[in-house]
Every structure is written in C-alpha cells, then in structure tokens.
Image (tube, rainbow, N blue to C red):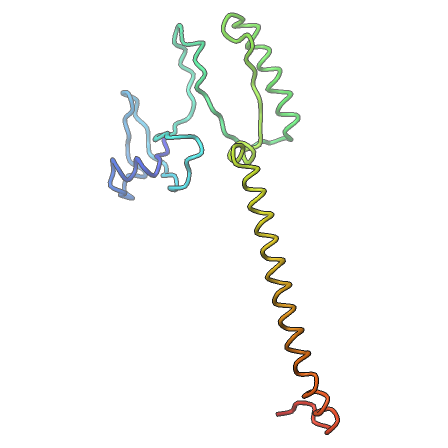
Length: 166
C-alpha cells in the first residue's frame, strides 16, 4: 500500500481520481495506491510517496538516520517514552559502534509541527485576542453613547406614558 503526496498526484498522474486503487511500482516493488494526501500536508518535507516501513537490512547502512515515524499512542506519552528508552538502550547494546550517542524519543505531533514558529503563533494569538477585546470595548462604548443620547427621548416617552409601542 502507498499514499501519494498531492504534488506527485498532480505532476505524474494529472490529478486523476482513478489512481487510487491502482498499482504503483517503486524500485521494482509493486504497491497499491490507497490515497492521496491533501495539499497542505507537508510537515515531513518534500516526500512524494509514503509506504509502510519494511525491514530490509543493508550491510553498512546501519549508520543512516533517515526514519521519522508518526503514530497514534495507545498509552500516555510518558509510558511510550519509557518503552522507547528501553528499545533505544537495547539497540545501543546490540550495535554499539553505530548507535552510541543516539536516542529514541516520542514527542507530540503538534509540538513537532509548530516547533520553529511556536513563539510567533503565540504572539499572533495574543494580538488577535487584544484586537477582539478592543473591538468589543469600542462597540460597547458606541452602544452606551447611543443609549445616553436617547436618554431625553426615553424620559419624555415615559412621562407621556408611551413605552415605545410604535
């Protein structure tokens, strides 16, 4: 099974919906296209095809650090991190020459996606909140000024017994 990026779907397949369910050959391996990602899905870089991870040991490639895994946790983050810590230590013991100094970590996806712009997003959120507060105060002030300007009219209506029926 394979999932195509929106860009590849547009460039190579002309945006045809019939691609889904069809075959796709990558390096001689056949996959079935199960979907196309939306155009805004680009947080993993310029990857064009997503396939399941397959164990394929290649001698001499132990030192390559190219795997990013995204998943949904069945447990809480602390427990997942402790389990990954055990896995990382086991890998360091088995492959001490390659895995020394490397670790395995679990981080929330939201934090990973906005890590570089988090402060800017928080400032933008604060600015938007301040603008909403100022607009609300301005509208409340205008409504109060309108009510004060009609105070004499309302007093006369009350004195005459007319409560604004017309």
